[in-house]
Structure formats: structure tokens, C-alpha cells
Length: 520
Image (cartoon, rainbow, N blue to C red; front, side, top):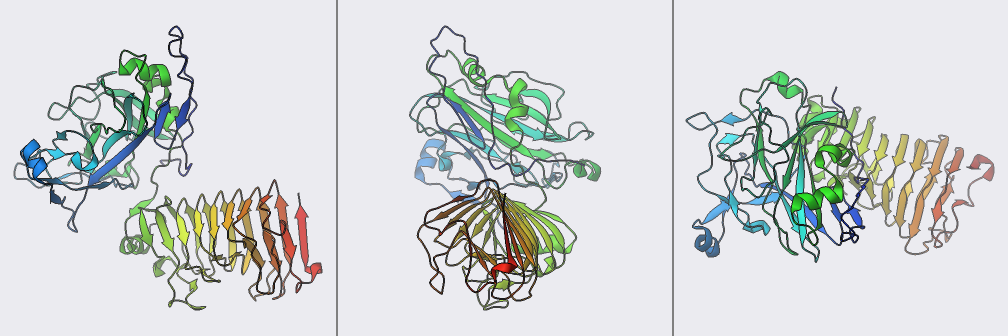
């Protein structure tokens, strides 16, 4: 089984730059890293990834680009671009041209619409299932920089030779650290594939490339693209496709260093960061990659669950849980731009606040945003949920079952996150950003016994809110007006804003004998 390490939402780098060139490079002491960029010196860059816009039939959309394009490039239109969407399936290409062979488009794709210079050939749009991944580097700082992009293309063990085809930028500004003739990619139309070999990243084998430009990227400039497109040969078998899992992972990481003091880009970047061949596994390890069956809208989400998929990747967008999810055990993955929205007002029970589409389900949510309409009892009824690295937006009510939140950002407005009818709830390393009400341990009327654990959490407040009966509330309030018993375990270090009335509070209408607070 293929394992992919998911949802370490930042990529940590350990950089050891041994600089021994006489002291002229002593200023190269500052390092910075983000999910997909690494910099050293007084440098700031951004990595941009795009793909073509397609219509409802999957055909790329062209757009009129204006007179300046006609004057400068001799063409009137090019394909429209949008931000790259993750979780591409591994599907063989389909030749629909008469020759049944790889073909190139009749015109050059211009990059002006994303602020980059030049143009490139693309594979003919009549060849289906080609993956666009146009990768650019932008100098967002104030200092001249040398830069490179490291590319890791998933290449599972045991696939047939020659089924992965690649298209890189063919201009000769790339340095070849090693040019391989036996890699499963191909050199199309003068493109040179610069491969460092195969590497194993988080249990998955990748072909590793480095693209280094021998030119300075000046402040405000956007580079030419490095990676362009990849596809699987039409002769790829079902067995080969299965080796990729649900998605074909293509990882990209860009680095930049100050140009001053160096004679060329390769020396500068290898001095600052080390060689890609030796360090790429460390740089890429832990980076978030799509895992699960990819969907892009509600219809695809419902269809995936109906056909038996149990692990789903949500591409960016807004979704609602489908009725097909009732009673299922699921894993739902994504990024914060994948928003799972509780049923809007006017639907469901409790004045449109309860969503029953996860009724009886056990679901693990990884990395996504869950958003409610801010009503008091908004939430999923009778769901047992595990929430890893998620964002909870607005109020949230936990129904009957068990719930656990790990490293979540919980942004509460209007009311609380209510434990509700849950038997057990865990909040571990979570941050509550609130308008004065955070966590309510509350029995919703079924008179169950509740155990709530709060460990290493931070409670922030913008003001000191009061409840309906005038009580200045604590970060964790316990309200037992409906009966039942309560155990609240406090572990580690919980940090509480001064606008709260302390960490815990037992409300007056609750018999203290029914509450046990354990402070470890």
C-alpha cells in the first residue's frame, strides 16, 4: 500500500549552509521557509502554479488577449489560466487527433496574463488527460536573486518503462546537474530533462529534477515557467494506474538566494542550501500532498461516497455533506480552502441548525474548514468526528457520539462550541479565537455522562462576553441544567485571555456534586 504523509501544514527545513569562501558571504546567515519556498539572505519569493481553464466538456478555454499581444507576439489569443488545483487522477492520455500521436498546439501559450515573460509550446488540446502544472517564481523582495525549482514526479516502483512523459521549459538557461537517458520521461521538442535520480519521500518513489536558471531574477519580476505538463502514455495499463493510488503527486519547491557575491546561480544555490541530490528528500518530507479520491463539487462528492469511496480529497471550493454519507466511516481531506458548510438555515431541524447527513457516521476530517451559519446549535447530529488541523468557523455543536480536535483553529462567533450530547470530547493543542464565549460543556437533554479533555489549548477573546443570565463566563463553562454527570480533564498548559473569567466555571444551576474537574 502506498503511504503519503499528509497535513503537516507547514514544511520544516533544516538548513546547514557551510560557507567558506573567505568571508565575503558572511551576510548569508538569514534563512526562511514556507510550504513551497526556501530563501537565504535578504530575499523574498513566491512560487505560483497555474493550469488552463477548461469548459464543461474538459476543453481548454481561449481568451482574446488584446492588441499588445498581437503587436508583440503576432497572435490574438491564448489559453486562459487559473490557479492549479490539487489531486489529479492518474489516467492514461487519449489521442484524439487523426495521427494518434503526441502533437503540439498550433500556437504558443503566452505567459503575460500571469506577469511572466515569453511563451511556450503546449501539447495539443486534442490530447486528453494531460496534467498542466505551470510553475513560476516571483521575486517579491527588494534584492536581486538567483533561483531554482526542484520537481519530484511520482514514479511508483514496478510501472512499465517509458509511460511517464514530461514537458519542461526548453530554453537553455537551465543547468543540467545530471542528464539521464534512461529515465521514464522523454525529451519533447528540444526539451531537456534534467534528472537527479529516484528518491523515496514519505514512502513514495519520485523522479527528481532540478531546474536552475543562469540569470538574475530582479525585484518584482516573475520567472519563465520551469515545469509545464506531464502525462501518462496511452498504453498505460489499469495495473500501472493502480500503482499511483487515487492521485498522481507532483511536488514542486523553489529556492532563492542573493545574487550579490556569486559568479553563477548553481554555485550560489548549492552553497546556500546544499545540492538537491543530497537534500531533496529532507526538503520535501512532510509536505502536504493530496490523499483520497479527488472531487471538485457536491455532485462528485455524493457520487464518490455512493460508489463506495471511503477516503475523499476535497479540491478548493464549498461543499455540503451528502445524504449518502449517513452511517458511513469516512476520511475527508483537503486544505483550508476546502469548506464543508453546515446545512443553511431553513433546512434540517432546530430552525435549520442541525445537519443530519452525517447521522450515525464516523468521520475523520483533515485540514479542511468547517463552517456554520453561526446559529446556536449549528452542527452535525449524531456524528463521531476526529478533526485534525482543521478550521472551525462560527458556532459548532457536537451531537451524540465522540469527538476529538487536534491542532485546530476554532473561530467562534455569537455563541460557543457546545459539547452538546457528546459522550466524550478532546481538545488538544487547539486555538480558540472568540468574541468572549469559547467552550460550553453542556448536556442537551439525553442525560448522558460526559468527559471533556482540554490539553495545551489557547483561548483568545476580543471582549468579555456575558451569558444570557449575566454571568461573566470562563473559557470552559459547565452547564448542567439538563442533568447528567461531567468530568473535565485539564492537561498540559492551557493559556487563557484575561477577558475570560478564568479557565473553568460551574454555572449556578448545576449541582457541583455532579462535576469533577481534574487538573493535571
